[in-house]
Length: 365
Image 1 (cartoon, rainbow, N blue to C red):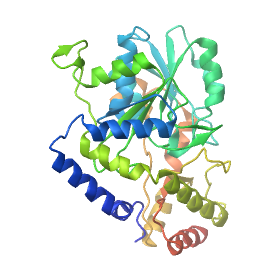
Image 2: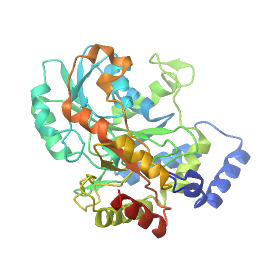
Image 3: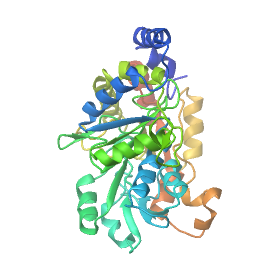
Image 4: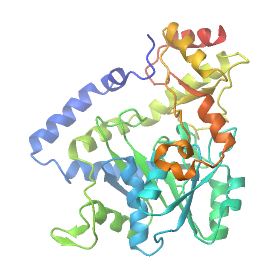
């Protein structure tokens, strides 16, 4: 079986560094809010080209904390609206509703699957205060056009950068295109921890200070609580592991682009729609997603040929029971995407023979 994602094989590349990190943290006797966290925050901030990185417990918390902080600073208030893609993973939307703001769904560009900037303006109301673009599957959204709309209407831009670590456009990296960005280091991500982990990046000093306090029980100083905070902290062990893996992230991204290039050059089947990519560094291929009309049969065929696939994501957010208030809404582009997409094996540890096998099997479908 060609695995969709062989996490053990991915992490074995860093076995020496990860074991060394574990020993260093274990022997330090300091496991929360220590030097490893500070080092990773500094390293990841430099990597993204921003002033601040705040390590948090996971990617959902990262987005929630950004919105919470903006509420504490008086920028957002309960009932305000934030525009978000209608085809994103549910976490992007949960972060908005969890903070008692209102998600406003907007269809994606059918070519890139990212938020369509030309559709944002028609969704803006007097309650709109922000835009939350998602760099889906590892490809940067069109941040230049999104910022043009945001500037016109004085809106905050919050990146969901959970899938796009290291992607570059116009000399800037993912995590440095918005007023703030949420990052996930879930194990399957391009920069993955060995457990849940996340971060916020921003160039806003006041926002960073507020997020850091809210994530630490609402406290800037121990036992002095400014906010009704939560406990959302990136622990020392995960921070040390992420530091070890960050050093080779650009090399990993280059390998993923090479795998994608091989897929794009080799797959030639009119039944299979390949992903759009402009061949720049704006895509780090967290996922390589194709579209097929008869997805169920297609997935069964690949399984029978020893190729593991995953569907990201089978149910659009407005069709989820959790958001039953949206059950009457129609987003035909999103619905089509969710019904047809399927993710092929995509990692930096796929062998040339495995890639060739995937290509040949798809061409024979």
